[in-house]
Image (cartoon, rainbow, N blue to C red; front, side, top):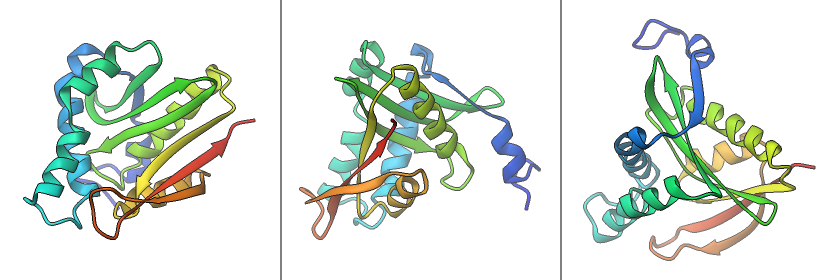
Length: 175
């Protein structure tokens, strides 16, 4: 099966590069975070106050600026042909890594997996004992992605803003 660029998904995956984000990536990261939030919360009625708040929280420019300037948060990007096509983050606190803010142009193109591998490699460089992430149950792609990459569910709490939603914490031991 070939993509719009004439490459199979496997061939495109080999062309995905990852790196720490640069200041000039800021606007594209915000755009991707907005797109990712829109996709993750598609089951919440678009245009509602709840939906808008969820999307705005994920694409907060002030929070991104803080992350880009932080000594313990690493915003990463994935590129294909030099174009930023995905973003994700690893925050290192007390020997543990929190993974967050993953968003890609396409959920099925291997971009998220490339970013996951890059964050796990970075976590290894910091000799972290484990990494964790949280995802909303309404974000079925996020749930499947965590499980596919060896994360185990360790706790569930009610979601604060979406009725019927839960937030699941997943962890992966790195020892």
